[in-house]
Length: 250
Image 1: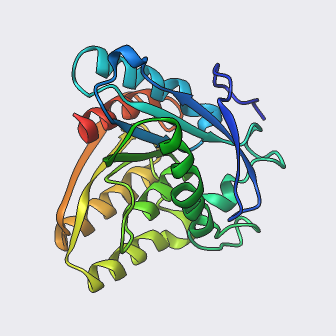
Image 2: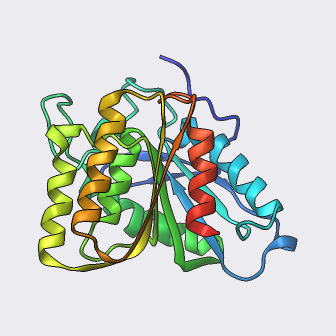
């Protein structure tokens, strides 16, 4: 397995009482001189791998005036995919599946993000409560969808790059359908991004989600979807990070 690929040093370690795991937290915050009061924030899954791409996108967009100065926070494990210290298969999956023995821990992980990590970040930085974005790629985007489609969603924006809707026989689609049965509105923004050269199952599953949301939309939820020609599952993240942040925070 590849080692973590971000070039950044962790800002601090965060212990989760909800999952019993120590997380490696990466932070890129604008200098005090460019801050203009409380700032938007992006909470990024797989921070060990995607932090550099998200930071590059946020800095470039802010420099061009397309988004405000934004705090980017990467949540990582300090270990590579498949290694014992990496619990993405547990933390990012809302339901248990035989594909991953430890799966189904998304609720506990989401409780950690909202109840433990966020208060610590808000203590360290002036953050806007109305501009919280959760972002991820692949399995991390499954967690992003789970976080958005809640009865009381904590995050105003959701950046789902190539989301793993396939998980557990597309159980996330059923969860979204059940939520729609119980409520007609959901305030928030959803960005869906994918490489046009990703697998047919990946692009097809995103189309299923888009059709579901068109057929029975949530009032107050805006949805933007982009497909990037010539990109696949492994090289699309820099483009989806940029496109997603521009859409959600612009």
